[in-house]
Structure formats: C-alpha cells, structure tokens
Image (cartoon, rainbow, N blue to C red):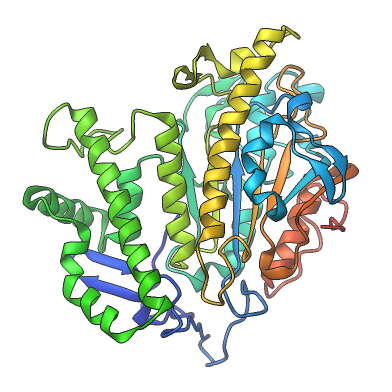
Length: 465
C-alpha cells in the first residue's frame, strides 16, 4: 500500500497539532474547530487544492465491485430527479439524495478485439486508467497510470498518506490468471506508472498499524508485540494527551473527539477478536497472513470501510481506492445462503435461479456501500457539513453484464456533493461516453495545479453532474 507520512523536510508540512504522538503511536485527529487544518507551501502561501469552498478537505474514492451486475435489477425506473431505485440499490434509500446513478458510461479499453478472451483482466486493469493493457502472463505487463494516482501526484503531499489502496481480495502479482493475462491486472486497481501497480492492503491489522503506528515496519511490529504482551490498547499510550486535548476543546469538538476515539477502539477490538478467532486460542496470532481478517465477509468489508472512513475523517488521505474484490472473483456467499461461486453464477445463461442469486450478491455489495455512505453522511466535517457532502465517491465495475462480458453501460454510482459542486439525487443517462470523461470532471474539482486536458480514452468532460 502506498502510504508515506511526510517528514519535516517535505515542501508541504502538516500542522503537527493534528497528531497525538507517543512511543510507537501516531494518531491523527479529525478536523476540529479549535485547530483548523491549514497547509502551507515552502513559500508560505496557503495551499487551497483539494479543498471545498468552505476550506474543508475534498475526499475522492474509487470503489470497485466484481463481475458486473444484473441490469434488470440494477437500473432505476424514471429519470432525472424523478426516479425509483431498483431492488439491487434499495439499501441506498437513506442516502438516495446524495447519489447520482450514471447510465451510458463504458470502457472500450476492456473490449476483446484481437486479444480475444480475458475480459475480467481487462475490466479490472483498465477501469481507472482507460488504457488497454498488454496481453501477457509474464513480468512484462503494462497498463496505464490510474486516475487516483494522477490526483495523488497533485495533492498527495497535503496528507500523511499520499493515497490509500485497500482490498478484501487475495494479493497475487505473479503468474497468469485470465486467458493469458497476468494476475497483476485482476489484483490491482491503482497504478502509479504503467508498470507499477500499487498492491492494496488486505490485512486489517497491517492497515491499522500503518495508520496509527509509528516508525518503520519493523518498529511497528515490535511495538505491536509489546501491546499484545501487555494486553493494552493503542489508546493507552496517549491517555495523558487525550485528557489534555479534551480539556482544551469544548462543545462539538469534544463530542467529535469522543466519537473518534470510540471508533478507533472499536476497530482495534474487532481486529483483535478476528485474530483470536483465527488462532483458536486466547492469544492472537498476528504473524498469520490473514490475521485480523474476520471470518464473515460482511464483517471484513465493513471493517475495511470503517478504516477508510477514519482515513477520511482524520484527513490522513484525500485519495483512496478500495477494490472490494477483483473482477472474475469466484467467492461463494454462504453467509447469505449462496454456496455457488460468484463468477460461475455470473455466466447464468439466462437461468432464472442463477440470475436471482447474482442479484442477491449484487444487493449484498450495495448493502456494504450503503453502510459506508451512511456513516460518511452521519460524520460531521470541520465546516459543519458531512464527510459525504465533502466527498466524490465512485462505486462501479468494469463489467456491465457478467453473462455477456460487456463493457458498455457500466453500473456506476457517483456519491457525494464534492463540497457543493455536484448535484446528486438524480439518475442521468448518457449516450455511450467513456467513463474516463467522469474522471476528468472529478479531477477538475480537486483544483490541481495543472489542468488535465485528457485522460486515457476520454473524449471530453462529463457535463450535467
């Protein structure tokens, strides 16, 4: 995962009062009225990129789900502001006014053409790049720079972590996976260069330690071992600072701090519970590669969403990708009564019972999205608006109909108001435009130093959003 904390020599330095520090701990704080977040360049001029009109941070996230969606259960009825959510998106009813369902966007770079099969590799590998990937199952793979990393190059120094890359899938960056395509395409969403994928973090424990620990990976591991031996929370090491901070602030800030610390502790306890459950004994086995991963897939996805939420709440990053699962994934969903693999079911051949099962899986994924968006909406930002108001969040897949491996009319949702520059609460149908047009319009909103004239296979900016 690409997460670099700034040093004192960085050209853009962070207000150090936003962190509580002690041996082995570096805990970023949420935005507080008492300590406004101000970021200055080397010349002393204040930086206004990646902020809203109120000065609150603007967060951007790209969330990916696999194997497309059943179109008849996905697309709403009606249009514009007068639309009704279909059964797959029913879980989003409470945040409907914060959504735009975007029809008619496609990814032609994922089409087969002379390369033949491999639609899952192409769907995953081109979704955020708009660049056709090289067909190879060797180490000479080549994709494109993803839009999240183009954004991170502009604004990454504003935050402790340039960007976050998360996943609830396996990590497999060697060998071939899909019709002579390298596995790296299906197991990575973010690319910093055409030959450099940014491997996502799949281990909740490792993500927690990177976000809240201090020092090198070896130092973080040592500090974790001490906490485990002493059966202490990461918050135990900053108790005096926590009490001092609480005395310095009043009113809404105090409530926000209490809510934040409670959230951090809750996540820590859930990771510990998962470690103990997998180890089958009272002491967790943190050396296991799946340490901290809950047995329940739902709990796993929500745990990762909760840490992404904390990353945005504390302004630890303003750019993130969450590949919930890579395209072509064949996970079963026994916890919702489906014992068949998702990928196998997506090739339903119009069998009604298979279609129903895939629609249930689609509904499951949207339910986790709803959980995250509702939490973002319930969390107040520095300016009094919600985190969701000050965000632009894409949820989508590089396949549209998994049965046909089509890449037109992709299932794409844009959530948030981007600080008031988006007009959600609508279902908009475009006429066969590249999804990269959407990314250009999102890039404009971060206010980077350079205007991006084209990205991937874009044909212009996406208007009417």
